[in-house]
Length: 137
Image (cartoon, rainbow, N blue to C red):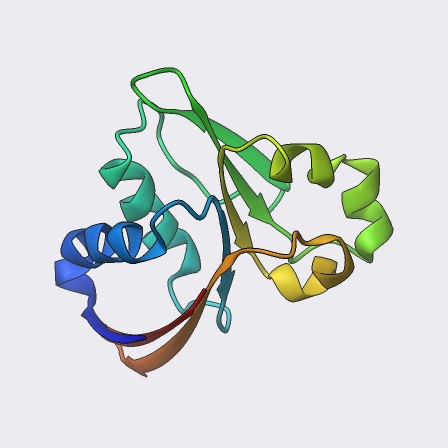
């Protein structure tokens, strides 16, 4: 599926993606720096009714947010990881097995430990305010 998204309509896009992904809880987001991976995750978390402010985990690597029903959401930014061993040391695999939403930026850096089933979104920048989202289940 390819979605053409205008950033001012990102809330609508988030709901479309959640409906399309159905029960998938592992979400991979690929795209160049500045393409809007974190911005999209903020909208997804808003649609999932998080009670926390969503920020980029660039320095913390993993952020945890909570939905109104107290279910956690995990947000990973693998950009600064030197290799997959760093992810293993941080026990990423236990987060993936939790059944909770896991939004993972730069997943190609940890490809060897990703679960077999996931929802992949590749973001292509079209203009300053629009993106193509190429989605694969």
